[in-house]
Image (cartoon, rainbow, N blue to C red; front, side, top):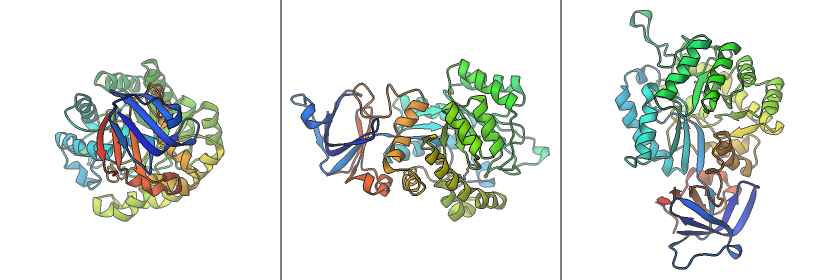
Length: 403
Ligand code: ARG
């Protein structure tokens, strides 16, 4: 198959290639670049997209495909595990059709994300490549526990683990049941009941044990952290990415730069929480926390971008509707990124974070043919990325609305 378009983004060097051709054999890109420099094989199937821009498939590093954005708080308690898994099938399709050909699923009860990933890989259902965490690890009563029921119903989330050896064991168990990334909660959060956003939950000692265990086994680690001390201890412990990163200080930025830690800052979701959250069941205390955190996170996003921290696109879709992931692009530009930087944050940077840059993240010879396109030039108007019109995953066209 040969794809042609007036433009292609080279996210490796941040340039725009005009009059572009991508040559695909099976699931792999065999050549990509300017038409004058490419030998197009005779008799290839050509998909000519005209005035459109070819880009690598997008990668969202923070989703919860088995979570339904219309059910939060006590509404979510009524959703069974099998029901959540089935919901995930629909969300996987919505996500892929929005141009996200790879996601990192950072937390799902009951290993429903493992089941979904395996079903996608087996070709049973349609969806993005998934890197999955299984249940997020967290302290008793912390952001990654379930704190909605009183003591007499004693219930805990699947990933609760306290102390260095318990967290090591929890990492080992998650790997045993199919996780290929590890997610844990270092601080309180917005949507959990009774937790303080700024307060640290795991100690540095616990985080060091957890990260060491995951790295020994070759897995990368994503950390939920809003509060400053939790962000810093997570970076010191050697996590690969920090999620949310709302209440940064200069030392946290310096540590991230020193360690090469990635920040995944979900700066769109605040709009959905404040507009639609109450109706969806988000607790009043969570709405109040969001009112405090949202703008500070956006200001700190700008600071981190200016300082040159490694940034990846992470939306927290699942809190808001799957398929709307792309709404975050325009906000990333509004809060300090160039359009090219925002697209790199959703392509080559996540591929590097996940140690998959040999296979994913750019339109280069030898990588998987994960390709998306929009009409016109998205660098002039990032809202075009909210409406991706051509999607190919591993050489298979899954959506084609151009022409
Ligand atoms: N899952 C996150 C939490 O509960 C969502 C935070 C959303 N708010 C934000 N401003 N990014 O903490």
